[in-house]
Every structure is written in C-alpha cells, then in structure tokens.
Figure 1 (tube, rainbow, N blue to C red):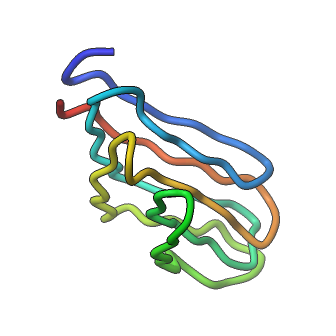
Figure 2 (figure 1 turned 90 degrees about the vertical axis):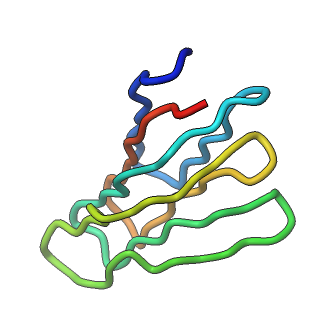
Length: 93
C-alpha cells in the first residue's frame, strides 16, 4: 500500500484493522447497519479506548465524522450489538 490508498473492511462480527509496519491510516468513517450499538475502539491489544459511535435500533447508524489515526502499535477494532459493520479510511504515511 502507498500514501493515498483507500482502506476499508466489512464484517458481520467484530473486526480488527492493524496496519502493517510503519503505515499510518486515517479512519474517516465507521459504519453499522441494523445494530443496537456501534463502537469504535483504539487499542494496543491490552488497553481499549472506546468510542460509542451510535446507539439505536432498527435503523442504520454511522460515524461519518470519525478521524482516528491508527498504526501498527495503536490500531482499530469495530464492534456492534449485531448486524454488519465496517470502516473506511486513507493511508497517510
């Protein structure tokens, strides 16, 4: 991957995105559909800094104004109360 590349992922269960090596990614959106809640977590594998993106039921939820910088040490985990979830971002280093 190179600077400017788009990164994204989707899943029906909790997902983790940990960039390789010295890559730095700016996560710009965390999304969920038909979930009772949606969390984005910045983690190093031991400590979790949790941000609840939304809490709802029966409607799609998203975190469109998200700006989370992640790297190989401090990376992204997305979890929801059920239903699909995903993220998108751009490589900045």
